Image 1 (cartoon, rainbow, N blue to C red):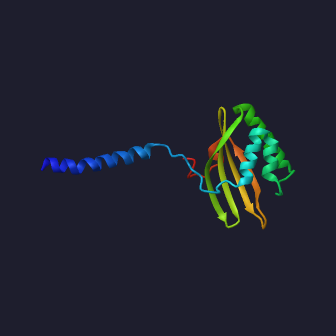
Image 2: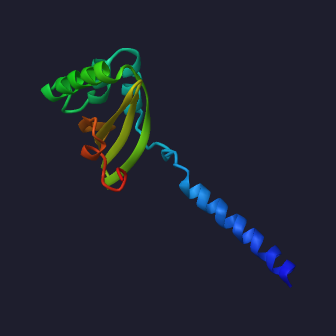
Length: 151
């Protein structure tokens, strides 16, 4: 009788431990397909290869922000971050929210040599393409990310 109970309990114990250990492992957020629009990825690639101004130009193309003071201020901020953290190495998708059928918010973490920068892009679907409506960057994740992703 003891052997039968042990044979039954052992697989349950192994399953419980495997589930517990998996829950303790940090998840890598895989973005859903098309989670990061191509114009944002193009801007990130331009940032890595050319610099912040190239990124801002790619992100704001066709939008109301093109050539704006806000866009120039964001480029200056990205230069400051590079001076502090070193070169941009890549990015991680954090989350996205669909606000309306034509408005989305994309949250990213930019990975520099010595630390992260958190980014929030509000994008809008015009009749022809996705456009940047606003962008915000901050070294403090709680200033950018929605509460459910920053805990």
